Length: 285
Image (tube, rainbow, N blue to C red):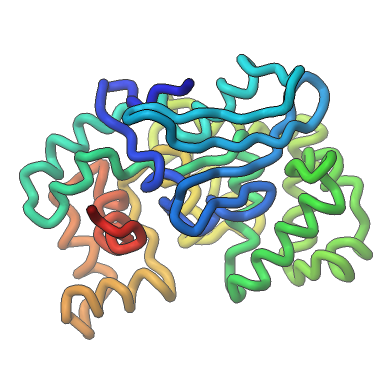
């Protein structure tokens, strides 16, 4: 059993977490349409394991794995993915004073993350400047062709893959050289992406490191910052802008205008913005 409670003692809504953003549903993950289950393939104990996580009794989730699986190790990874070590109580206190966002304090706001920063970065780069179907094709090819038994591939496996894979199988387009460069630098120890998860690093330094990576622009940087638990930046793209304009009835509002509307949330501005846009992703009781 996994208790669905954050580091500050706040409740965690399982469905809201697994349906928190589209990238959460990319292979090896598969999220039920209603958020009632998360299925994935995780590496532990030297092999890949199929893992299924579902809500159990109120306030708890249950992890289902095959007999003989290293349960403790896999549980730690699942807790990491669900962000149960994050403390959102300060955000809930601020949101509670806002009639339009008070609902989040029931357990929303956790952005499901991958087991590694590397995986989240690769998936994020695969969302840039393309249709969602293209993103799914690229990430599915990475997991199915380069991963162990369907798990997400290691940096070494991605570094060793040739142009024939990136161009002909995954059809990553201009992203192929970027992905290979990042994977090679990680595999050979020149790039430590996991260090970006260190909460002691200031946001400015993390953003600077991200923007220095091939294939990472303002959108990808903002998306990665959210997945790293750094919620100040707003994800402004071809979906969020028109969605916000439609919700607010302000068809001409600029990016600066959107940012001003959420400035009062300070370090949680980007998270407040995202939640305002995605409230209807989960039917309310």
